[in-house]
Length: 336
Image 1 (cartoon, helix red, strand yellow):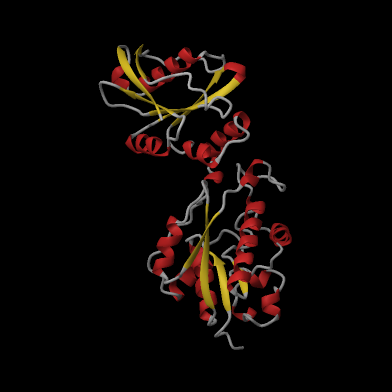
Image 2 (tube, rainbow, N blue to C red):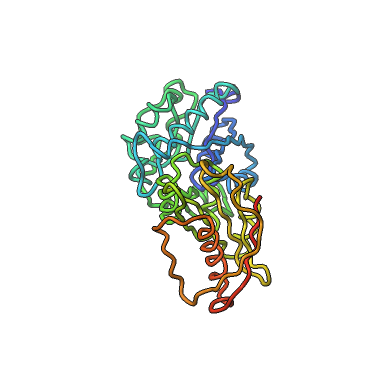
């Protein structure tokens, strides 16, 4: 078998299994390039770091997965539509492989490592949905022979039979390939995080047409949903630390309101109105004075008029600066 001109695209997250998939294929003389997907739920930072260590060139594909609002094959433990997500990624990678002249697509998936999305039925479904065959070098001997194996583009005998969550075989491969520094196993997708998933469920409930920019806000700060006229919800994000404050400022956009303590340091709060109201200039830049309670007792279930809404947001801003509790303070409100 002459592998000099055989080329593969490997879905590359930067995790150990995707690193091993690359090295296993390279060992057969196959030219490998990685492809990493990024969205508001996961990024390619780790992938870029790990790719550099093994001299792997990367394609970056930005993919906002709207299918999470109503995934045809349901969610995993939280709000992660892994089957549909993996299928979409393989479909995109397959199209890129065709465009760039690669022979096949591979992943570092391990059979049984994730019970919902990496069992035999799920992997078969992913192939059907994607419309492309995919090689899984770490578990290939436990799975049906792929077309690339049948065509002898890869040597099936040199592929592996890893199953489940036990990492013993991966540890053996780490020694074999002399991998000194590698990332610990960890989920890189926010949709598998229970706290973030709960936040996102609320946003889907209150703002079904939310955008990527809206979802990005949920990463930074405490979340409050206040009700304004016509039972519409207003998102209030209160920064927990300097990093949150800086990010809320950075990702604020036209129509947002930013609240800050005027005379001392404290949280930055961002208000974003639903699209039905965002273009209405019904509140101007101003400074208001509030009394900060010792104990937070805000009813978020009752509608508020504009003045009440901003007063409530101002109290939230000041309350999370503990030094201001039990006294009056001024809050500066500015519109982007």
